[in-house]
Length: 68
Image (cartoon, rainbow, N blue to C red; front, side, top):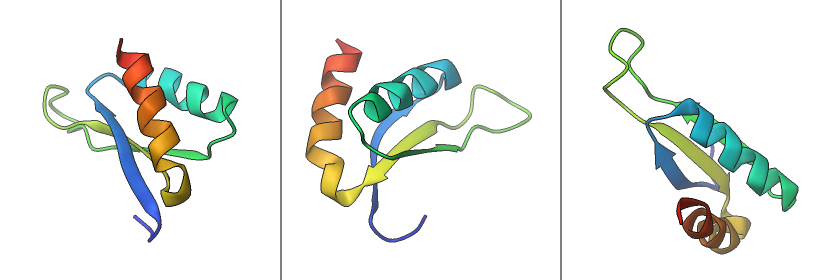
């Protein structure tokens, strides 16, 4: 991952990562999803959501609301 990107959310369900990405984009926060799930065994690994470091606090607050 390039410098300046911070992981703000992890899940093992791609649909959750995609929905959360949409929430962040609705708040004008550029987002990147990295899928670290094993391609053979879907029970291993996680899907990570990253944002630029200047949006970390806001993104983490939105993640907390999203999980509630």
